[in-house]
Each structure stands twice: as structure tokens, then as C-alpha cells.
Length: 277
Image 1 (cartoon, helix red, strand yellow):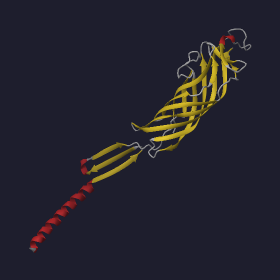
Image 2: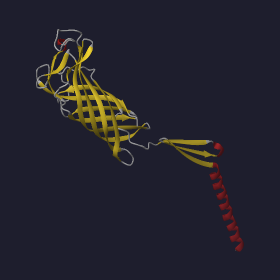
Image 3: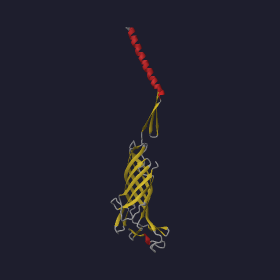
Image 4: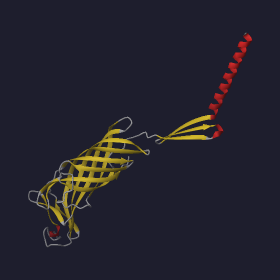
């Protein structure tokens, strides 16, 4: 009886030894290395002389939430009369543009940086070029109105007709204070974001110019315009490229159009730029 128990014990010990050696052999020949680089997790498993298996997992960790507006941008400008459509009676050229800067940063965001709110400061310089040989002037009440550009000369304000009179435009500067709500996710291991918000705008330095006689002349620097404005903003961000749309909710100024009607004019722009996060 004792001999039988010893035989069974030896068998159990032998089996345990075999299993222990097999396990030790497996662990001795198996090596797992995890490397984290940038936004990728790379796992490499080596099994003895059989080669290695490499598993690459693309894991976007949203290390930071990107700015919703471009650091540097260029945009196309248009005017409308409050119906979110171009105003045919305001002769604006398609070459009208704006350039500027935004400096924004998140003020609050979720732990995974998928949602956030950003604010900051912007500055821009806008040029509205007019067509149909019209120039923007002001009457004694400072109301802006259009008159033929051809009436201007390099001699005096309303001298002999012609004299190489061409190209008139309205120029002004703006300081901007945007507040944007952001949604960010990963697309092909690069940040993708949509954002929407509002913007406070302070306009200054608005002047009307015309080129004639081979030089640029100020037609009016006493325009009656609204120095304070309020806009809505939408943006689409992919990596460091930004497309944005801005539309005024408050009018910029009142203009007597080509039909003689007083029109409240709003600004609209579609722009493209880059972030330098």
C-alpha cells in the first residue's frame, strides 16, 4: 500500500516537473516588447527560431485639442443685405478679400480632448473692391453712396473726366474675439475637427480709396459705419489645414445703393488657412 502511494506520488512529481520545464521553455523563447511612438502602439512578439510577429495598432490619443481657427488665413469677401445672399445693387468685385491672424487656445476640454471650448484674439485687414466704375463717397450726413469713378482726376476731387481713373475699394481693420465649441476625433491617425461659435468684432480705420492719375487717393475717411459687430463662425479642421465660414449677424454700415435705396450691408467671408500648433 505504501509502495503504491510512492509510485503515484512519483508520477505526479514527474508530471509537474515536465509541465514546469515546458512552461519555462515557452517563457524562455517568448519575448514581448511594447513600443509607444507618437500616436501609435507597436507590439512585437518573438517566439524562438520561428521568427517574429509584429502587431501595429493605430491608437489616436488626442494629446492636445487643435485650434479651431487658423493662425494665418486668406478669405474671399462678399456683401449681403440681411437675407444671407449677395446684394446685386452693391457692385462688389469677386476679387474682394481679407487676410488675418487668429491666436486661440482651449479654455476647457474633456479628459480625452474630444470636446472643448476655445477663445482667443484675431486681427484682420479687409478689402472690398467695387465694380461698374463706381466709387464709395459720403454725403454731408456721412451716409455712404456710390458715384461714377470716372468723375475723378489727379487735379482735384471732381476735375475733368477720365485721367486713368480705375479701381476703387473700401478698406478697414478688425480686432476679433471668437468663442468656439469644438468636436475633435481621429481620421487616418490625424486630427479632424468641426467647430461652431460666435465672434465679437471691433472695426476701425475704415476708408474709401480710388486709384487715378497713377496714384492711390483717399475718397472718404469719415464713413458712417458700425464699429462693433457680431458674427457667427463655422470651421472644419484637418490636421493643420482650416476652412472656415463667417457671416455677420449685425450690419456693418448703411449704403445708398445704385438704385438710390438705403441698404444695410453685412459682411460674409469664406476662408482657408493653417494652424501652427
